[in-house]
Length: 265
Image 1 (cartoon, rainbow, N blue to C red):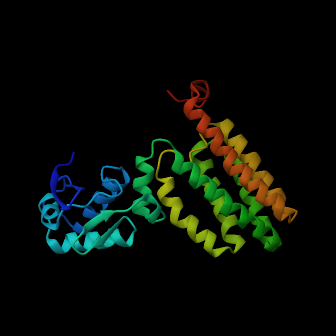
Image 2 (image 1 turned 60 degrees about the vertical axis):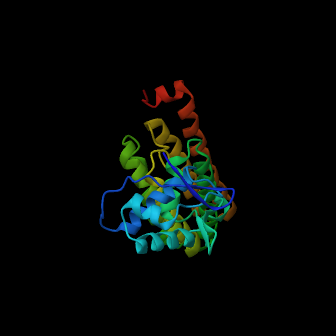
Image 3 (image 1 turned 90 degrees about the vertical axis):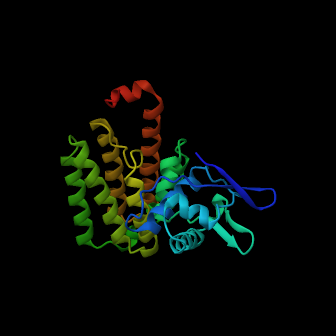
């Protein structure tokens, strides 16, 4: 809930932050930044809104002006706001946000009820991993192929354990990414994956033994393409594996019969 404050620019509303933080906690600027990010990403502070004056935010958050100024500077670096002398600090549209920033991505994921961000994440993941598989197919050594084969056998041994299979699945994809030598793509995934995996939806395509079986077929197909050093087949296998698994999981969220088969209430 927010309260109106006097306009800084005629015709532009300003909104006050909620004074919900305890008095003078540690790492004050981090807590202020996190709170403001959540308000912006959730739409409570929409694009075009003006942040409250410094003195109002100082009172709301029970912090000093220096903490508020540092927090606003960090928000500006993340593309969420822009500060102009005499015009206040304006919330920017989503196109300006640094969505790979962990704080912004986490807030975006948490506030997205449509799963659109997960669709985008899976498409990005599929595009990056398919290119890494393409490169891996052309450079893997015999020893590296043997290691991948051992990982496939390990996955097969874990088909009856949904939790351990998921962990081994992530490790399998990570190994291919590492062996590809595609440093930039690997770095992007390492930036996004921890935040995404912390959410209940992303990565949870293994809900049953049947899901493990479907996933394992994809892993085996990827390995066979890499074994035959076929970059096109490897890229296609990765893309179909990731996007197909995600589409199947999404159906389980909306189809009660599928959810029942997955053990959902």
